[in-house]
Length: 207
Image 1 (cartoon, rainbow, N blue to C red):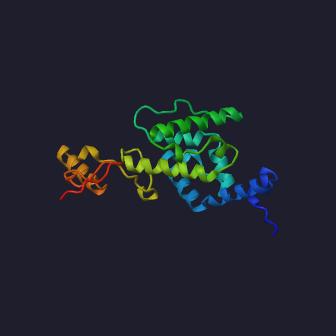
Image 2 (image 1 turned 90 degrees about the vertical axis):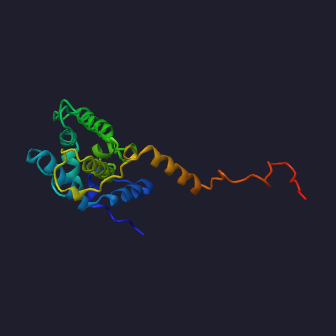
Image 3 (image 1 turned 180 degrees about the vertical axis):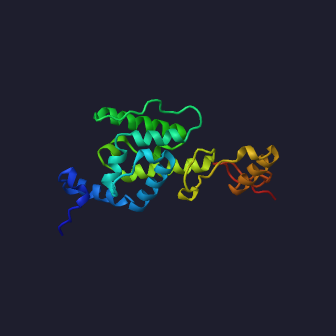
């Protein structure tokens, strides 16, 4: 059965067999509705100066590709000193990739986990724009969760991440929690060992 050519992939040249199938699956993960929400957030966060992309995956990629919008975004999420000191648009490929890499480093320092992080080529070569969306969603979720006054836009655009509240518990509560966990794991603390034997030893029959 012949596969239909995906119009969104026309600029990438022909791709055959397994690689075409894999790329198709990756492309299908890209969410146009999520794209709209992310654009709304980035514009709310950075201001109208960053412009807006043409609708669609290619427009989204082109908008973010040189790393400048992404760098502006991560800088707006910091009070005081900004993580990216120099944001400079350039037509040179390696300069654009360098700017994207600066964003990725700053995003990781902000709290985005490696598993949620896209690779520079995912954006720059359009290999996996769904991964780019995933990184931005993770970034937005952390920003909403931090609630430090830097987030702009509707907080309902992102889920709050689960936070550890260890410091909110007293020592007694922590000890009590550990006991509960121990019992759930089948702890035999406090149980008598009478009638039990070590491995490989004959069982004692008591009269």
